[in-house]
Image 1 (cartoon, rainbow, N blue to C red):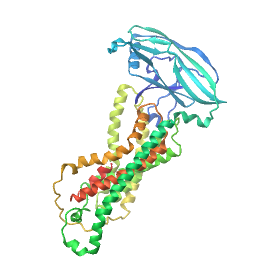
Image 2: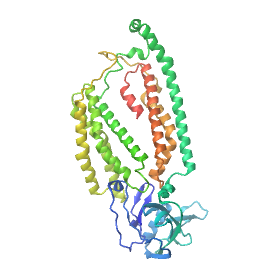
Image 3: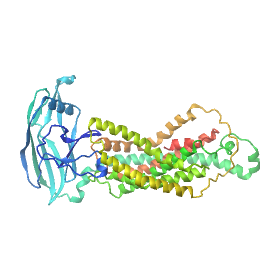
Image 4: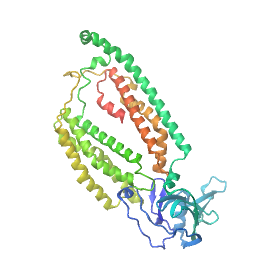
Length: 481
């Protein structure tokens, strides 16, 4: 049995608290993804043998000091819980309970520590199918006071045979039928939003643009001579290169890489690679796929940068390589420092940091350079459908709701309304003890999110051009992200 102590998204070692530690501890060798996930599994204090039942077996006897009693009391008041594994099946349990005697003052509460877990294990022939843990509410220790307490930690093991096949033992960790119905209903709601948005855009294209195209097709010469307001009057400025084109190309390259990573992750998830007890596989896949797809970022950034007539492609590659890694490195340094200070398991060991650095230096960076060289030599040219004027046209004053920040808020409203229910389940998996398994629904919602984001971005960009604002490049990227 492996054990770990968790508090929301902060994880601590189980034996950081004064539980039984007389049994020699054996640390499990963790894979890269498990270390990144904060897993630091060790052998637990309970000995469980197959089909061997135990009743109130003494695990150890301890005399808790005043400081240890205070630590347990603080943990119980904050709803600390532990996570353990048996035969790679996770299960959870709380440290204790709080009894409020009817007064709002926390000093009037009673704090009780559970000292007797009861393990109920279900099996089929020679395979473990399920494990649950419950607490014997009669076997508790009062840790309300600040005096030393003698505790006899004990445990009970019960075995029960069931007819559930081994292949279905993970069904317990999947969403219930009612939750899946809610998720499918949310997906249907997203589809309705997508249909309404499609109809809205189709109306714009059919009623506005179609009339303009017909007019210009019949009388192209008069259309060129006549000055009309709206998007038609900025045809000589709409394809003017964006400001900070090196940064723009780098952002495009990083976005292409992130999109590729997301697609690969979804493919692995749908085929069943990230099953519940395959701990750390997701983070391992993220690190490996990120390193291998760095060439895509380099190719996309360098190719587009050269299309924009950029000359410093080496500087563009350096910017592409640091645009995503730079903020991640700064964030990691801050979070890892905090994790070390608070002694949580999320603090990465020095060896893991060295491994990640070597992956970045020996795999990611060379692929980035090779992709950049291929993009530079691709000889792609930016072919605008109309000629760009030498002098940029003045942008007329815009009302407040057509400026960048209000447009960003409007662009994020519809996509968020389409995915907010699925986001709840994702957050419950990341910051709670739920295991996310409905990857097919998540992939469908992701596709819907892409389409809605593309549609709403096109609509808002059209409105921007209709207001004779030809600085659409950066706005288009920001609205879509």
